[in-house]
Image 1: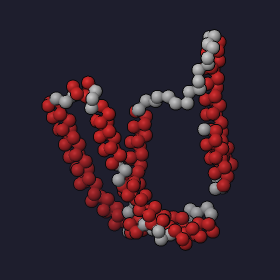
Image 2 (image 1 turned 90 degrees about the horizontal axis):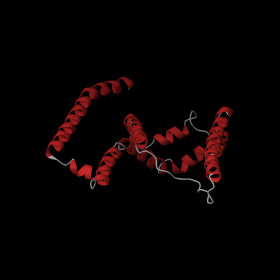
Image 3 (image 1 turned 30 degrees about the horizontal axis):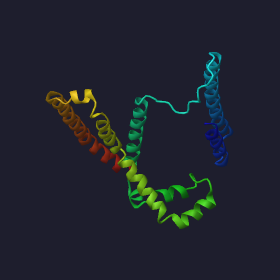
Amino acid sequence: MLWAGLWAGVFCKVVDFSPSSTIAAVSVALVVAAHRGWVEHLRRQGASAAGELELPAVKRFRLIPAWPRYIYIAQLICIYSATGLYKTGSVWKRGDALYYALNMDHFYRFEVVTQWVSVYLGMNLFKLMSLVTLYWEKAFALVAVGLILRWRHLHRDAAWYKASQTWWRKLIGGTALVGAYLVAYRTIVLAYPWCLELQQDST
């Protein structure tokens, strides 16, 4: 964490961020590193006071709850899917979005270098990167499907999972799934004409 904060500080200085941002990045890393070191010190000090001859090794990895990760994944799915759906128009379809973004004076930080790189990569690598970004974000919701399939694969041999494979539970699950599909379909039917009107207004 300390090295990450220092690198973040160097990055802030290079791209001309404000001094307060640089100080904040380094300060956060220092606080986290100091807190982690103090916790380890207290743990080893307690073991030493208890008369243990071999002090416990410093813990670098530990099990963490799974639900915060799933919330984080759900947030990413929402963000990527939304930004992917907002990427419309011929500029994105042609793969020119990154070229224009990097060469607008509102965005670029290194004017000469950016334009020099664009000369050689604007028609090949920039197009590829733009298209990968576009379809990566549009299809990111498939991660949820992968998580569902993985969950079944991990727990299919568990006793509680086998006990759930009864006809009435499958019927309830199937009914709920069909209901969810109908709700999603109805939402799309209602929202699609409104989105088309917004598209016409923006043009």
